[in-house]
Image (cartoon, rainbow, N blue to C red; front, side, top):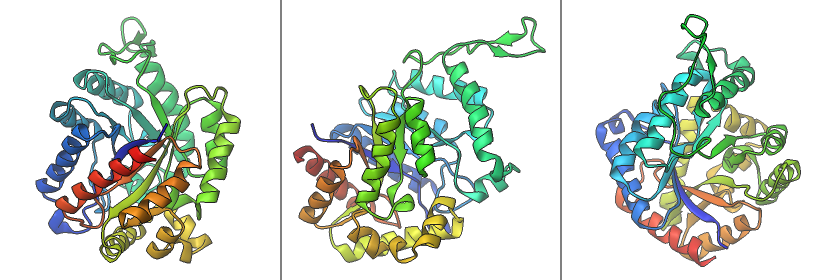
Length: 330
C-alpha cells in the first residue's frame, strides 16, 4: 500500500507585504483542493511573532476549514503545549472535532522557536518539563475525566463538550532527537518528523524511524508522518523559494534547524537538502525517485509543504496535483 499523501502549511509569509488576509485565503484554497483530490490530512503549524509562521491559533483556523471541506482530516502539527492552558486547549480541539464531524487529528509538541516563548514570557529551557505536565492534563480533559478544580463546588470539572472520536482524536507527537523518538514509541503514539531540520540523509531518517518502531509497545496501527518541501517544476524556482524559507527559519532561530546548521552547514543548504532527498524539488520523475526512497524508510504519511518562500497559488496547486498522483502510483 502506498503512503498517505498529506499537506502541511506553516503559513510562511516571508515578507510584511504577504501578511494580509489573502495569505490565509491561499491556504483555504489549498485545503479545498486537497479535500477533492485525494489527500488524507491537512496539517497546520502554530507559530507566533514571526514572518515564517503566521498562524497563532490553529483551532480558529481549523474550525474555518471544517466548514470549507467535507472529507479531508485536519489538525495542528503541532500545538505547542507549553504555551497554553491544556484544559482550555482540550476544550477548543474537542469543539473542532465536533465542527468537523470527527475529522480531527491532534499533533502536539514542546516547541522549537525562541520567539514563540519569549513573547509569552515562558522559559524555553523548561519546555520539556512544561510539555510533560501539560500533556497529562490535556489528555485527561479530552478523555472526559475529572480535572481538579479546588474552587468549584465539587472540587473538579469535566469538559462539557467532548470530541466525536472517543476516547479522543488520534494523537501525534513531534520529535527531533533519538531519545524523543524512542519515548514517543514507548508511549504508543503516532510520530511526526521534520527531516530537513533534524537529519542529514534518508538513511538517517530510516534509522530514526527504526528506533521508533523498536520502542513501540504495539506495531499494529503505528503511523509516522514526515514533512518535505515540495515543488514540482523548474528546479531553479523551487530552490529560490526554499532559500527564502530557510533564511526565515534562520531569522526565527529555530532550535532544530540551528542545531543542524551547527553540525553541518552544507547539509542545511537548499541544494544539499534536495540532493539528500530531504526536499522534493525538480521535475516529475526526479521527485518520484526521491519518494520511492522515502517510502522505504517506513514513513506512512508523506506531508508536502507546498506554500513556502512565496510560491504563487497556481504553482502550489500544480505541485499538489502532481504530488498526489505520484504518491498514488508508488
